[in-house]
Structure formats: structure tokens, C-alpha cells
Length: 273
Image (cartoon, rainbow, N blue to C red; front, side):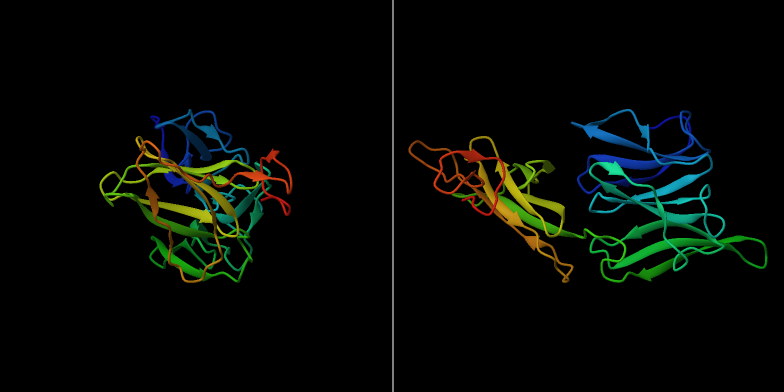
């Protein structure tokens, strides 16, 4: 990951698999560029430049909790002066051309280090300026965001514990979340071996198939719908795993088939059961 050059300003995706950062290492386009690396098992792949960079400085990347909005500062694009803040949206796995966030945020000063709350309602960024004595100063600016005006897909949180159905003791289990409609793996983690606790940040308005398994236990699978929430509090979802025993049985969830048919389908639709 790290080089002998300047590597800084990291922003980790909510799924823990993609890390964005700024660097002046060789192989880029400008003076300082945005790079990213993706995790495979516990190691990161060789970093690559993020595709939409300029010949000057592109810095302070921030990937929103939804994984679809990347905001960064640049002095190599048309703007209001100095560093301006820009946002690129990911559609169909492709990053779109960045848009300037406009004069409600940017001005003739330097705007940097923009972050947005998971629910998309509040943003914070740094603004740098020179005082009368010629010294550079920074201030943190708080910026309320109108509903859905910046981030379309907001995020919420899910928190819970995994326990043994018989002893009620905490379990270390692997938990995977799949998009119900695309069957794409979205998140994967382990519950804590001491407390049994786990935590996810998930996009609201989506449905997930949840799979939890531990050695010596039946796996558990069920559907979980993330609803829009204004409380700011995480949804609680405890998972109970039953020990494997002779004669024991389990119910399989997330198995879909057409009405009056035994043919299995990959995803649910209006006629699926």
C-alpha cells in the first residue's frame, strides 16, 4: 500500500473492501492524484489511479457510505478559484464525469476534505484562507443539505449479536449480505468472538438476503429490508444459530420459485413465493 512518496488522506468504503487515497507517487497524471486499492482476503491489491483525474492536484477523496458518491477537491478543473469540491456518481459500475458542487459550497477560497453524514442530511468541509498577518488558517464549515438534493441513495445502520440457541453464549460467525434482486454479494464480516456483535452500514430502500454460519451450527438465512429512517439509530437484528444435532431440521429462506411451479428462480418477482 505505502510507497516512499506522499500517501495520505485515506477514505475507506463502508464494506471495508475499497480504500481511496491521495498520493504523489509515480504513475499518476498530475502532481497529486486520487488512487484506490481493493482488498482481497486481508491484503490490498496494487493501487491504481482513479480514472477521472487532472494534470494538477486531485486530493482529499471521500467515499460516501452508499459507495456510489465520491467527493474530492481539485485545482485542475474549472471552478471558483483555488481548490473546489467536486462529486462523481457511480452508475452501472462506472464513475461519471465529476460535477462542481456549486457556489453554495465553493468560492474564491480553498475548499477541502468534504464529508457527508450517512443519511445525506449534513455535510462538513474545511475552508482555508489567509488572515491579515499573511498566515494560512482553516475553519470547519457545517452545511445542511436539502432532502435528496446531493445524495440519492442514503444509508442506515444494522447492529446485532450472534448467539447460541441453547446456551445463549456469543458466537463468532461469518455474516454475508446479498442483494436480493441481483444476487450480488454486498457485505461480508465476522461477528466478534467475545461479544458476538456485528455492525453494517447499508443503503436504505434495498432488500438483502442475510446468511450467517459458524462451524458446528446450522446456517441461518433470511431477508432483511432497509427502510428509510430519520432517527439516526441503527436497526437491531440479533441472529440465533442452532447447534447441529442428529434429527434436527431447519427452514430454508430466500428460495424463490414461480407460482404453481417447482422451477427455482434466482431473484424474486411479483409472482414468486
